[in-house]
Length: 113
Image (cartoon, rainbow, N blue to C red; front, side, top):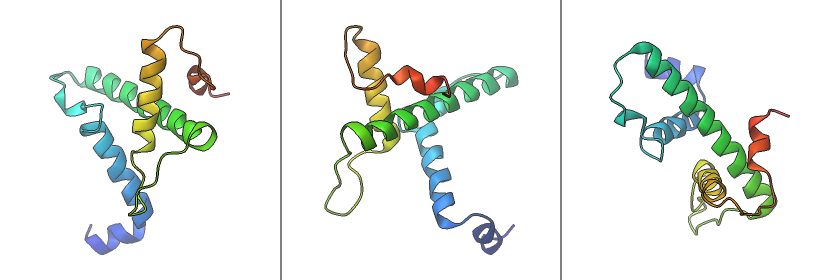
């Protein structure tokens, strides 16, 4: 496939989402490349768990951005942090403090209801 065919199949917005997911899996918190697994089954399980974690962090971050406290917008129009990073910070704070009271239950995002 050449670049023109790829552009027709995947518009810029979709390609940007794919690139953002790829960056998130590699360097922005999950460090998927740091694994030393060599068995295909184990890599598949690890990738599935990391994908679930990314979706969970995105859902929590999106909910927090819309309902609790919006992410600050910088002068250049970009967000100060990604929605996934925002969700990861919320999940981390809830898991580290057992008596933490937040406005939303982060675990309901896992139940698909």
